[in-house]
Amino acid sequence: MWDRRSIIAGGTASFLCAAGLRAQVLPPQGFATPSGTVPFAPDVFRERRRRVMEALKDGVAVVHGAGPVESSAAVAPPFVQDGDFAWLTGIVDEPDAVLVMAPAERTVREWLLLPSRDVESERWEVERLPLGTEVERRTGFSRVARTGGLGSLVTALAERSKTLHFLGPIVSASAPVPKALELYGKVMQRVPGVSLKDDSGLLPALRIVKEARELELMRKAMAATARGHLAAMKQVRPGMTERQLKAILEDGFRAGGGDGLAYDSIVATGRNAASLHYTGGGGVIGEKDLILIDAAASVGGYACDVTRTFPAGGRFTDEQRASYELVLAAQAAAVARLKAGVYYEDLVEAAKDVFRKAGRVDDFTHGLGHLVGLDVHDVGDMSKPLPAGAVITVEPGLYVQSANYGIRIEDLYLITPTGSQRLSEAVPRTVAEIEAAMGR
Image: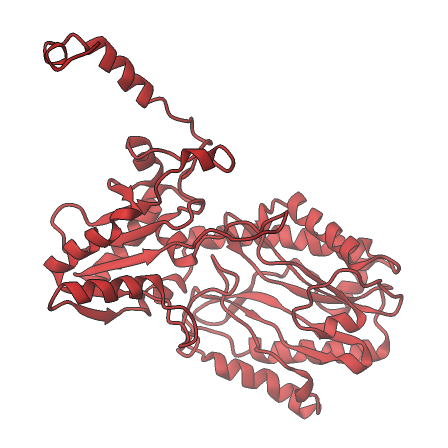
């Protein structure tokens, strides 16, 4: 039996050494979470946090990651990390994680907080790392703690800095209060003189302009997406179900190097295509149907977004061609104005003018496009002039349930100082290109 005296005397040296060694036996890389930073090395995310803290200058900022997926279904949806948190940390496999930044602190300016471990639940779900040098190495944070200490940490920092920065998101009055605002309210009730500053526009302003490394991943995602769309065009046959065609499409994404879906694939035939976000899959493809596919692969968590509409039999009818080319003309009118400094609302009006002149504007029932990046509907203030380096969709459409069709043409564009670059050019788009690709 070991007593205090023998420990002091060093009698337990071998025992303590062995215990210490056992404590340091950790899972190798590729096992346990957090697995590391995705899709870039920790220094990329450290530099992004530095830029944010340089802009904030002082105070405290808290960014919460997404909560765990709650589902009673036999096949639960996958966990998807909050975009801002993922962009700042690269930690995509830890629900309920928290980032704390304090730019004016003398030594430590950033903390990663992770939920406490539950070794019993880990036997059923996924193993998680204990705190220590390995989790610090994988994440690139020199200070990793548990979320149970979040309140005391932010209170202590706020007591010194007297400013709390809110980085978003702004939500509607009927939505739950964002976790950061809820925490800030409690801190302000307990620390006199603390003020709240709205910096919710900072992260969207930084994220809207894509880094070269982000564009590289988006181009890879687009190459995989093009392979899937081409496979669907070539292999579609009347009598197939939408679900069968969807399997061909997504197999093409994987074969092309996609490692995920940018969003749930929409494969809609005939009348189903007139439902903008159709979620079914049992429709049977008819010989004269137009098929609408809105689907894209992702690579490294980065999305792209493409929609194509094509004839099941391989040839557009005269009526189908006329409507299709009207949609294409509306897209071209908007793209002609697309360059750095343009207002999104001016693009919308350019497309609508084409439909108005044709007497079809009431059949265009949705927005013209959205920003794309780490999220398929990415952040950025589209009420302001669009900057060079932003990536945006242009996706006009016509939807007529009574005529059993919906037509949407969606392409992805990188905005440049003088115009734009179509990132989705490998996916057939014109009537001639589509019919040639289908080869019927």
